[in-house]
Amino acid sequence: MSKQYILTKSKYIRGLQCVKAMYFDVFNSRLAHYDPETLARFRQGREFEASYKATYPNGIAVDALAGKFMDRYPQKTADLLAAPGEVVLFEAGFLYNEVLVLADVVRKNDDGTFDIFEVKNNSQLKDVFRNDAAIQHYVISHCVNAINSFNIVHNDGDEGFVVEDILAECRQQMSEIDTRVESFKALLRQKTEPALSPGAHCDTPYPCPYRWYCEKNNTPFASQPVTEV
Picture 1 (cartoon, one colour):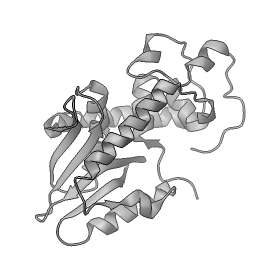
Picture 2 (cartoon, helix red, strand yellow; picture 1 turned 90 degrees about the vertical axis):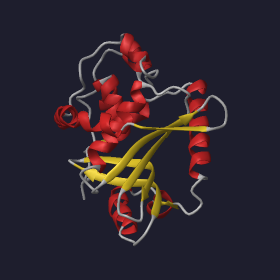
Picture 3 (cartoon, one colour; picture 1 turned 30 degrees about the horizontal axis):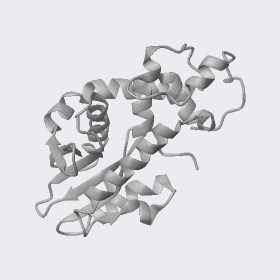
Picture 4 (cartoon, rainbow, N blue to C red; picture 1 turned 120 degrees about the vertical axis):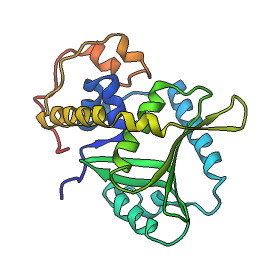
């Protein structure tokens, strides 16, 4: 059975930086190379996220139930959210318009409203974090009713948490995101490597794990067999 989704949150964010890197993420992710500093940043981010999730002792980890079967996340999430009263989920999955997102923390309140929390280990509210939250809101807002807040949780420069609600900002980007999603999906369906050269975009907002390939090998590999998206 083919996947229910073409894009994920991480691939969408990659596409904002470079559509060629997004293409690699889908069809040739084995080429990705991360330096030790980047791997350390990933680890620290996971640790910070875990520390915030620990503030919800009754939270249910959807990933522990669905495992590596990503297509199962949306239904498993919907089943858990159908329970009466307050429900807190970690890595809750939502699917809309062939885009799959996993939210760090989703809280369904007693009144049926939802509070969403995206956790980032940084003392600054960067644009890439805003984009991360915006694509999640785009998907989740089509899957649940009454979103009360959409928050970015980041650190205060020490060991505390800063929670900032950017729901209004996310709502303003819906039309723009819809257009971009359709553009990204169309590109991926072509299964043709985008013709882009290395440049300043390779390092903003993150060092691209495929830059070594673009700099070393200018021969496209799109003619090679590729797997289905």
